[in-house]
Amino acid sequence: FAADNGATAAWTFSGGRLRDSWRNKNGGTSPVIAGGLLYIYDPGGGLRVYEPESGRQVASLECGGGHWNSPIIVDGRIALPEGNSNSHRTTGVLNVWRLP
Image (cartoon, rainbow, N blue to C red; front, side):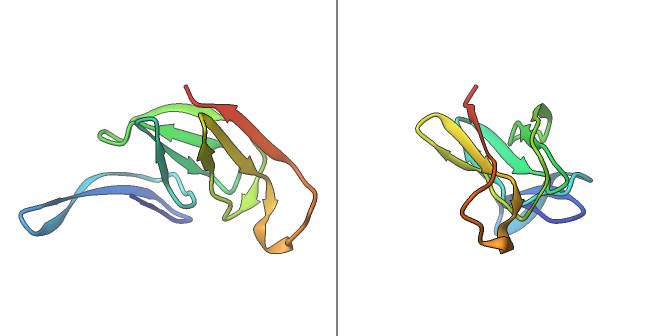
């Protein structure tokens, strides 16, 4: 899986080659898989949740915008900081959700 400003995409490795599985036009940051789902943060705001095999979006979690923040998933919870990761601030907003 990969995401950038312009798209999110998935590939499979078969017969010694990478093959396109799916892609969409939703930009995002580093993809994270947990609990059988794919999580991708949209720097414009929102955390999109996909089925990894099909690319079907199953949820969109509301949150503010940021700059290349990536979701952190541990112990059944999703944590996502808001704001510019280059600011190196010690205060701010941290969104936390429970895994579905």
